[in-house]
Image 1 (cartoon, rainbow, N blue to C red):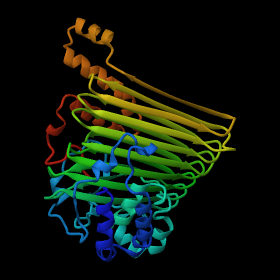
Image 2: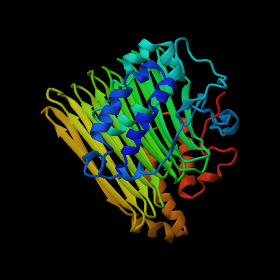
Image 3: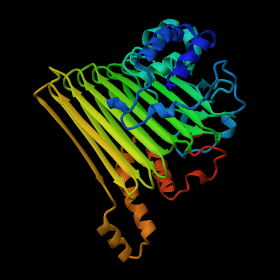
Image 4: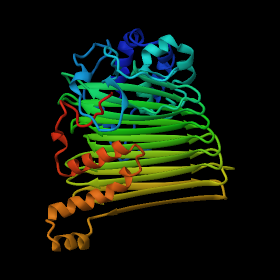
Length: 453
């Protein structure tokens, strides 16, 4: 039986339940997403964008799906209490794929800002949600986006109105919680209007030692002269499969800073698709991966320069130990008449064992002649001369290895603009290299959360 057949059967049998427990704007595109999924099926490794991760195998197991929206017994505001000094955030939780609204955060948002359940906001503001939902994430272009769209019933909605500049970052902790193996389909819609500024920190965490399969689709609209910082941190466990697709739309003179950091995982596939639609826009897209054992991390990016006078910068670094597998495929697409484009893509990788594997494929597709575009990729091992130098000065081999690894990824961490978050990540990365990530003192359950105040 093909892996996708169970999802086709699931939709046909549970369609009415999906509709009943969601809202009209989400339901409006559900049937089309289903038809698109049926036409495409789950991608195999012959599909260029998915050749490094076997999606057919990942979706074979029979996972439970919470179609009736049963509330899981957890109070994340009590369970997750670790904090990072000097960084005050507005803290929210999403349990599996449901926005947690039983306890409201202590902070007060600026006038007009909305952070809440996508389902509930679709019922209160159907015209606003309909205008933006599923407009970037095309279901006929990606089968996993189609799968998420046909099954997603809730998620997170964020709206920052015109010229509102938020001083306090928004932190969203995505908690995986279940007593059985579970499939989670989470949706995120972010609207940053003209002249607005906002910073997000998404933390993926797991509360239970179960097998999880998570699909996530994030759509972010960044208006003219607006600014969006989006930090995504994964620190789950080896039984977790995470498939995340991020779609970003940038208007003229906007700024986007997107950072994805994988500290601990099972199998992860991240896709970023960023489109410039107005001149003068800039983006910085960075990635840091630390993997060992049998962990697998696949980052796939597309930066689409549809207009001229825009700048994009990408820096992705991997440190792979054990039998870990890493993959990076990045495409910079410069369309005709997109003159004065500036773009830089760098992927640097460190394999610290002979059994670790890295696949890298940076690509340029340029149809304009007045541009400055470059890309580069390296795969190497620890520097023997540097190791010898440090050991000669009394540093043991294990500590020397850790120092070199830490210095290697430090360039990515230093790109983070929130200083307390940057300092904390330096600390967490060191703990990760030492194998101490699960021993975070002061945390009830989480490996990394920020206390709201």
